[in-house]
Length: 240
Length: 138
Image (cartoon, rainbow over all chains, first blue to last red; front, side, top):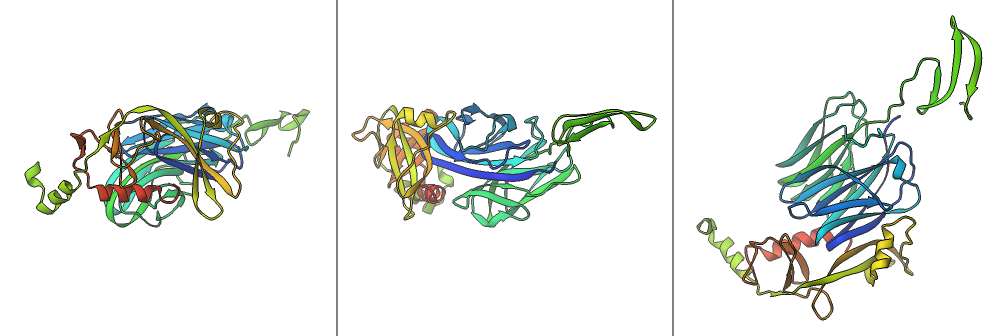
């Protein structure tokens, strides 16, 4: 099952101790909701992120003097109804939060791989070594100079504030597993701070050869002797 | 360190030594933010219970005539006349300071507010940074 982009949203406050905004998920199908958060100082004062009242899990973080974190939540807690995301910090200050949802994602809530970058150049390439085949790359980045165009050489910018804080993804499966990258483009040489992770695709569990599955769900089993079906075909609704 | 600052930078920093008045945090305030049909942003104060329910299951999101709800937020309430920070006031923010000058909120480190004055911040640059971040929404 291939990963696909679903929807995204954003909210910010200056100053604020929490920010609330809506994220409307279009489709829930082995989905993941990622929330990228930036506070404009360190240390970490982010106290959490919730979606529809459910606490999200911090997946990775970066402290460069500004603090960044990515939180995630899986299908079981997601809904296509309009729901709100709340991001909180322990002290009042600047909060930027971007959310993005994807379908067809592995449901273990562990990033396939993650990396961070704090580099100075006009174009900054961020490398990552994916573990699974057909991963997507997700990144939240800050540019000191402003993005040139969409800010990404190959991929998609999904949300932006002030052409300086943005989230991106590869908008394509990265195959095979191994070394991949995203390149971020500024208007001039300057600092790029980036937190990037790869999300693995959902892979239906492999069953025995006589088990028929649709999207990983067992729909029928066939009894055979010497390759000839002799038993009944047991079905559980809507065999396709 | 001071002797390494070139004269023009030093003059700019001295120029930004703005006198501040310290105020105290006495609670929280809650706001809804709407984008109006004419493109303007309208901020309306709300209650804690109304804000909190937004983050719970089955929220009732705020509505306004001729506009759409963009977001809501919580921020500090101060011991000032209107409960907000006015220009050239600041508060201790736990890990640093939150101050307002020239109409803009700026976060400052503990080394950047000394003797109730802004030190070592080039204010105009800090304001440009904040405006760049917040202009599209706030």
